[in-house]
Amino acid sequence: MIQAHILVVDDSRLAATIVAEYLTKLGHQVTIKANAVEALNWLHAPGHLPQLIISDVMMPEMSGHEFVRQVRATPPTDHLPVILLTARGGLAERLAGFEAGADDYLVKPINAVELGQRVEALLSRKQAVADCPEATIITLFSLRGGVGTTSMAVNLSIALARLWDIQVLLADMALKNGHCAMMLNLAPNRSLADLARQKQPTFEPEAIETLLLNHESGMRLLPAPASPAEAEMITPAVIDQIWPYFCTAYPFVVIDAGSELNEVTLAVLSRSHTVLLMLAPELGSLKAATDALQILTRLNLETTQVLPVINWTFSHDGLPQKSIEATLGRPAVGVIPYARTAFTRAINTGRPILTTNPTAQASLAIASLAYHLSSAEIKAKESHTANPSQLLIWVRKLVQAV
Image (cartoon, rainbow, N blue to C red; front, side, top):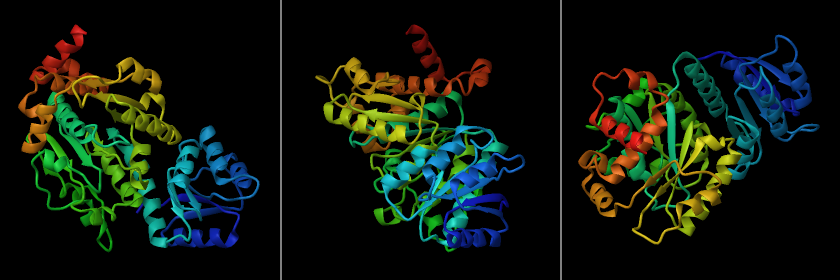
């Protein structure tokens, strides 16, 4: 267990003392401040730099949200992980915390075990990223089902693996209705729920590796839970525990976040490097995409991190691409041409279109998007590849022709 210096900020002396006692028993050093103003003055004094901050939200003089904004405003405190504590639960409160810049959120009364897990997860995540090259995490999301989010996640993972001849991790985080395994014709026996249900769950790399399924393309799948009941076992605390693995295990991690907005989805989206916002060229899908953009903005994701992808799920009479881009206020990073028959066959057979027909227009569009998202990260390998893959040769020709 990582031992750290932790700053606890709470106007309730009793609440602060209880949290401090929990943390001290775990071996951490704790400093308590009675309000946000006092905490900021302490942080700005030389030599006062904790490894983590835990702050109440409702405090006099300055709220916890404003305190986090001040912490994030200037170095050397701008990088410190922050957990907010509040008596109010729900998505709205969690969104407000993320919008302010917090890394995590706990609802009072605080459970000692959960607090310890969240602290350990945040410290481990920061340490893992500091020690190892950080993976590129690409999450696909939509607030509207039926726009091809899972098909895109599956094929994008295969494209990345085949472009660069590397292992890529696909994580199915559409927890209640994940279909990645079905689309890959894989039969999972276990999922994250099996780790989460243990009395003393461990999320060490060795334990996570036992859950992964290998696909012939070179990508690996972390499957969704087998049932909605098991999906309930995956909480933001579990996401915290597994995130260091996501950050360091593979050069690229693709996440299917599905179309349901919940606390787990927020935890995944807020930690992603790139979010591909999936939509079809019709009004309902465009409205869902604009709503999603508002949420993603509140999660402090930059404009360059949220990239729309238009999937032509029907053959004609769709909204013009320029109109969609004007409404969203940003260009689409990819447009997937209509290929309903091919995608339907792929779903029914468990054989993705990238594996059965890699030269189809839809396949090359997905591979080109994968190239766009990955070529800068893997520039050294691209320029020195003695034997480029056939897919890479095709995509390079396609990119040069544009």
